[in-house]
Image 1 (cartoon, rainbow, N blue to C red):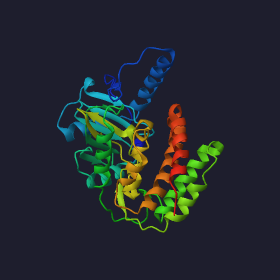
Image 2: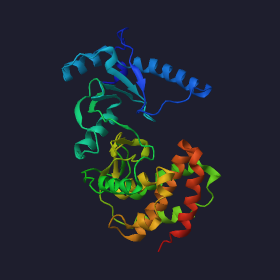
Image 3: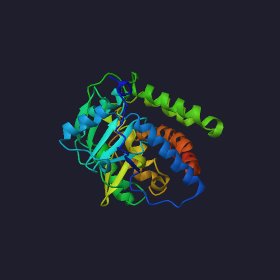
Image 4: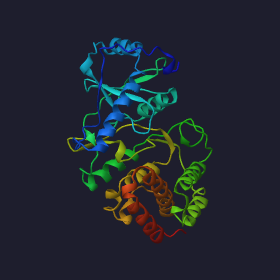
Length: 320
């Protein structure tokens, strides 16, 4: 049953507060004031999805009484889900059935300390209860060496999945190269004429289909925007569920922040994973191009670094 079909009456006394991931206080400016007003409007809209039926079910499952100060809303990035915590012990995510299935599928196969644990899922009411990950969003406060080794440890321990096709769960891509082609095509539609030389990307796409790829279940959106740091340790949230090669997630994470790839020599990146060197070069070219698009959309301030290194990588990575 879709969440929006439920009663949306919220007890008037419930006025959950809003927080982000413990980010430092911002100086009051007109821009921040407008942002705060928009946040409050967003909170009011989120309240409309928070039904008393869900609240009752949560209290019964957790065997607790949820009070006014127990709830705390969080931003949910690009997702349309409603996300809030209870006493900083549990994270509740109200979302679509496919998204619930992604969480169930990915977290059931990745039970390491890097990821949240599922307490329970209610498909009828459309929400999932997860363990709460304390900490703050990654802010260049971990050493590059630790970050590299941790991301490699995460991605090299992904599990195989019995699944028909490749790409994001519940999408239809028959091959790994077909998924990559679609991602590159989408990126080109966003970048437009801003990137003039994609010949080597196209060359990499044409060659990569020759390499066999096993079906591993990846996070699918591994990057600093989904990294939580607590006591100098890294944790990961918000899996999207992607079937493919772990090398993709490893490069995707390294290229998610310009401070990382500016600090890591290309030769060192190529040392990770026991795969054919030409295949790894192709994947770097393709994934970096995809990340270039993400930076153009979401990190315009640092886009110039991505563009500069994109051309540097093209010059350094010869395909044979």
